[in-house]
Image (tube, rainbow, N blue to C red; front, side, top):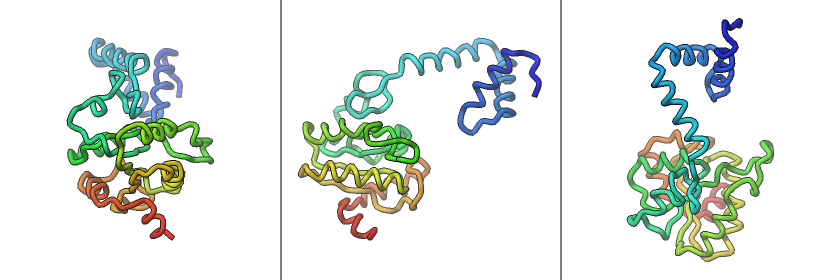
Length: 207
């Protein structure tokens, strides 16, 4: 496609790098921003700049935050004895939308996937182990996706945490095998958490 402006072409190139956006959609979005008031596009640019330079991650659970501790870890009305382990920030948002879970979280930042070059060292596993040792935790719940990578990550975490005397559980299989947690409806998601089972029991059933 020939563009009348190198600036326009560059903007389309950058927009098309976003997931799910092809070049035609990128062009439509860029032209839309050109046609709306400049102040609106400037506000978007400012918010994206702040996202890059000012966003922080909670020092305890690694959730996106504006401060050293996120509003969940710093809140006074959470059950500090339970930690729900998730892959991604989006999973925290999905569970919080149910309004039923009152414990804390730990965001791994992904899942073990040798094919993609992601090993334990690239995930927030060491800090989870430290929390298990040093905080008043009684139970850790694995709420990872029901994929091969998710199950591999859960098993790796279980081996590390089995040295402690914590209760380690996994959500019930209300979430279909192969499904991502963020796409589950709220009712199914909270039932899966409420009906969680000991991790060791779940591995025996899988066999």
